[in-house]
Length: 303
Image (cartoon, rainbow, N blue to C red; front, side, top):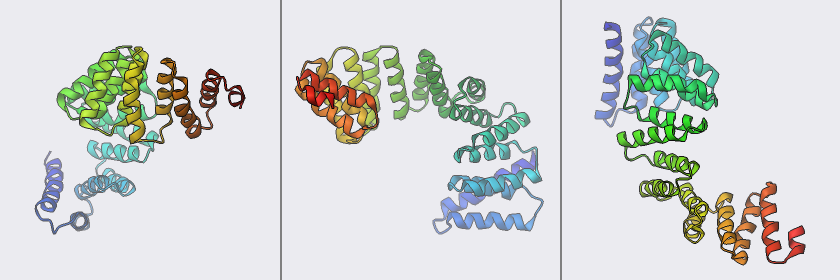
């Protein structure tokens, strides 16, 4: 326990100095930790501090090297194994991340961050069934872990369990109301449940927090199309195109809204853009062909 306390004190003191003294950059903090490591080659604390510092700076390879040095000096230090897993995960080296997180959990079964890391990594590997238990265990240890609830919600989405997903997205927002991705994912789940009014509201809440979240405009448009409110779908879909004119799906849905309204002349332009942007997709050309045929332009349809 005393050794662990020394780790925390060393890391916090170095970073506190960097925060309170603008002249002391992160590089100076790293130099301080390096000197501490040189002063006592058997002390794992400076290497752990360096691992955390490099991870924070996005220098994941260097973080891995320091976490490995930490583990070589103190193999039972669960936080170092967890940090190693996080660094591997940041580099998409997921199999190695799994092993590191498993070792951290073996050393500390109730270590919430390591349980979360393991669940998150399984989700990246699309092994969603395996992700459930560690994420649920992480939330038992840390019930207010925002990332835990959000990630578990996305795992339930992948498993097609949208009611459970919505529960965790709502919990995410109870803890952190300023989380546009949680509103958006909740809207997507409502869409899957054909709860179109709830979906529209969730997407609108997304846009309140992030006005350029063009996918939320697409979600609103799709909810209106699916509930036969095609006229109302047009404006949000046009907004999505204004924000991101290179996103093909917006044009596809806009064309569908006009088609459903029987306005085939207006549907042609978005379908042309859909086929232009997503020119390798047969569906885009098929829908353009149908649009031409509705206008009795059979030669263009055949092309």
